[in-house]
Image (cartoon, rainbow, N blue to C red; front, side, top):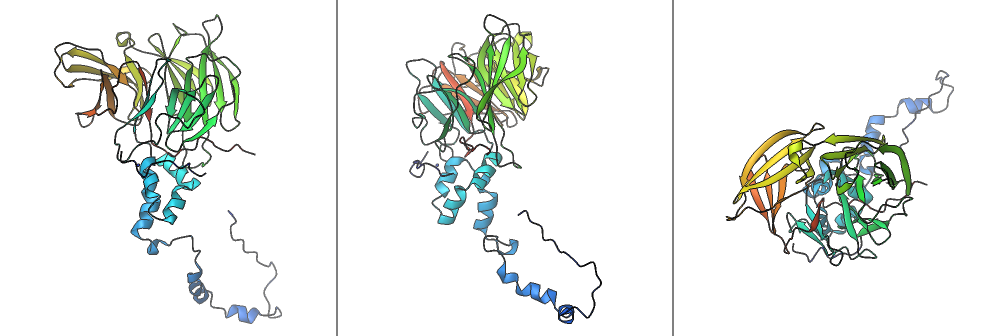
Length: 407
């Protein structure tokens, strides 16, 4: 894979064939020519003489330098923008960073929450932007996604890949590398506001990391939810034989999350629709009655969580964190989010991934409350952030959106 030429550098905000020894079943006798010479052969000395013929592309542990250690053991953990800048270190680093192996390693190793890709939800203004947690090391060259063939609506994000919807097509892209793929049309009508989840879990053991798109859609004139699944391995859509008819309200809300092989969909009732992608089994998770619909599904410390926030008075906000399949209350905390306000105001919980933080939007500000450190961090926004925006948590990864199909 070769990366497109993107302007990161000036952005200040960047066989297995085992050796088989075949012996003779007959006894060795002096009648065999050369046997005496073979018996006197010094294998150990000869082995030492061959040391200098060690393959040039493999660096022995004793010969490694700091730059070799960094190249092998540090680069896979860095975000995409930083890696793009390090391509200028040398031709060797440039070649390594562009290699499929490093891309595979980085997409698995670099899983830190990087920020939000967000978009206006009005039909007349669908400008897409990126809010970075660290602009100096994390970024994308074209947050507007103008490398795609049309204006799109962002729908789902997972492990560095982004699912978008055009006028008639779905696209999966990587905003960091501007790598993108057009998906074939689905068999069923998904609607203008489809409930879809992008499912992508990079595996360290398998360099061919395929992704799925799961759409949960209501059957026509029936309170039944069906599931259509796209696989990048086959590049086809298939309709699952599974369906769900037990939801109180079959209208899905659009919010979604994928983690540990399961896709989760928010609904317009106090329920979460879960779907095991591999086994194709749906399930319903009930939320406590007092939760209401003022929170967000999020991933916290590797657990499925539902987080709510409420402005109690002035700048004091109450955060409730529900976790597990039972969605029981695990933590409740009051925090101060400045500045001082004379009146209470509405707030919105934003989804997070691979983090212990809770993200809350209050008017044009976004705050991160770090649970372990009990610290509040205010995130500076490059643009005024209004309430009518969709926020997708993003990981700055080199993950490949255009995975080659199996022959």
